[in-house]
Image (cartoon, rainbow, N blue to C red; front, side, top):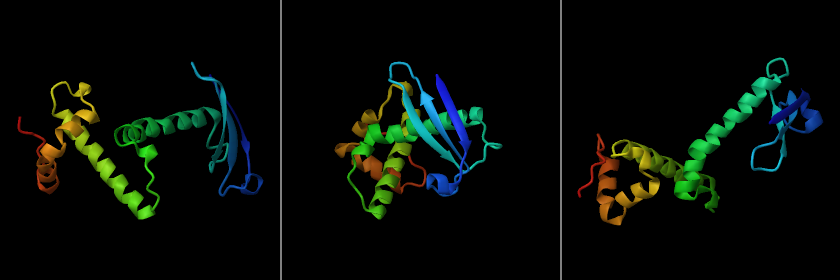
Length: 147
């Protein structure tokens, strides 16, 4: 169950730029203790009613449980201690590239729904690194590995 209470607000009231509306969202999820989260929006109440706000809040979690969860599970992204902005950008690009390669590789496997990033990393490990390098340099990459 979710309960949302919202009201119009000004940036000065909440000390946050461009705010038009604030809300408190109380969530009662199965197997979890209830929680209350604060939300802010640059949309006025006329453009963002409670139903749309709940929908938008829920859809934002699709990003977290899609790409971000995949990055955290396969690359331990949340444990990364890189803090330099340029380094973070480069490592992020390589991690996303690795995930793209995995998705492409998985689609070409028998029973792809059973393949994990661990399977992919095993296929591309040190003894098979030349296949990964060929893929990076090829115009039309192939994910076929020698048996």
